[in-house]
Image (cartoon, rainbow, N blue to C red):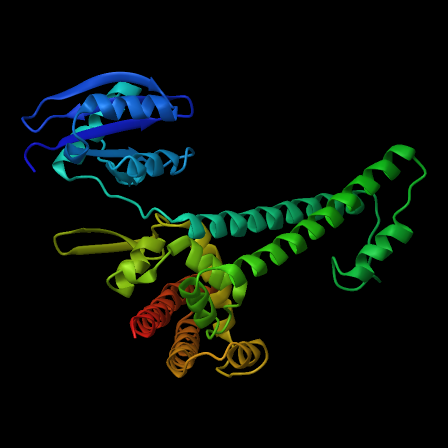
Length: 377
């Protein structure tokens, strides 16, 4: 192990800055190479035996393309969490060369934290789920633009029923007309964008249903098992699985909660303990769906409606149902108790989302272990 060379790579779209930390202590820069497969292959050939190399680079917009290329070449590689790279408070000079050298130095010292790299199936499902999330955000923007436009011009659909239903949109088509051609063109454009966004979401949701149906049996089993929980339908379960991957990689629910960024900040010194808002250091997509799902636990525990349909149609295990029922009882009790103490509803739901993630961990771990035992038998 003493002969291992630690390679730090500062990766950009067109270039890669390379530095090597030698076992004896020397850290030297090897310059900059083009971010091309043939250039990376030549670099690895020059650095020496593959079994003596350990490479790392920060996670970023270039994704995991370099990781897959290096692993295919037989080189050990890790993708590093950028927010957990040590930073000197007095260091005011930042260049690609210095960043590569710092990565190599810290990697040799064991001070870097690697992120989970999804396989091809998880990454494909994650990109599809995030595309739907982006479409939902676009839909909200287009709806806001159309609604504010109508409000500015005194068009208030008070008799059109609930907003953004078919009746509401038909009211706009019939009554939202103007004498000026420019305004007619504007409202027509906004309406088309709202309708187009709705079509995009339907197409993406259909594609997600097909992707889940064609996923590996292990991924599909976990997605189905998570739907035993109240407030967790297929879209939420698929988001959790594609963002986290295998939940068994977390040794405990506490570790998973910390990864999600739903735990409180803490500044403690001596006898003083001070806690604040949540850290938000983890996966924002995961936090969003957890908080949305946690709102369902303000209601009294029951198994009916969507929860009953999912548990019946998916033929879920008794263990998953038992954990889901325990989650309903505990989380609703927590909601009532915290509300009685005068806590804000937003803070209450955030606390419930953190505990809900623990129940998800329990269901996923049971499902994955049962699937592995069944497969082995």
